[in-house]
Length: 281
Ligand SMILES: NC(=O)c1ccc[n+]([C@@H]2O[C@H](COP(=O)([O-])OP(=O)(O)OC[C@H]3O[C@@H](n4cnc5c(N)ncnc54)[C@H](OP(=O)(O)O)[C@@H]3O)[C@@H](O)[C@H]2O)c1
Image 1 (cartoon, protein in one colour):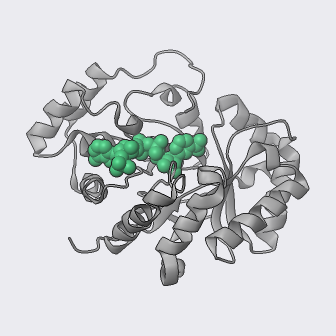
Image 2: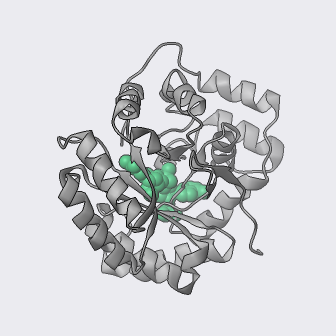
């Protein structure tokens, strides 16, 4: 399979960001699987993937070292997302955590640095730290993760809060709550949403409705689930260590769902009709 060109969306800053990337949660947790995890990321990069999502939390920092090994000399072609843990997200703690991530990632900048979820440090302190890091060129953009609708409104009111570039949240056909208020809010503010656990860690793939749509397109349930999210205009970051999964998931970029497919999926996985608290994994 040759390298493909992956479409991009515009961040509020105007910079492009790929709509498809590779996740890394559960990578770096065991030395025995490390080589395979590096290989899976390299395999994706060889096929044209230019976005990798990681976090200081994953494998206690080891996932970031796996990303460094996989990216190697391709650094300038790859958009790296990493995240600071809420416990570290004080003004000084964020700066220190970023330095540690840069060292593990063997790079001089992180393309997009996120607050992993809200903790006890004041948002204003985390944002101030992000702004300092951006001014120093150590991060190019910053954003948040697991922020609900009211969190986003509060952030937008904080000093420099409008510089937030994304919100990374749990979103897939079985978790559609954000469509009621959070997703419309982000769309209004032209802020792309990153959908994590886009195939619900595999748990949704046995659903009959996905199989029915997949059969019509000679596709697979995972490809249908990912193609549906891409159609919603969000960024997907499926994680796969099996090379066959890496290839299969990329096939979602070639799948165009019809109105009939979308209607069938809406019947099987109804959209929300009232506000729902944001789900988290
Ligand atoms: N911000 C946050 O709080 C947060 C939370 C969760 C996740 N994330 C990010 O989002 C990424 C993706 O989410 P996730 O890892 O939770 O779940 P996911 O991407 O929905 O699913 C990953 C799981 O599905 C399997 N899989 C992948 N492709 C498959 C396919 N085509 N057919 C069958 N199984 C398949 C993988 O197996 P193999 O590995 O064996 O291939 C892995 O076990 C994470 O890795 C992480 O980077 C962020």
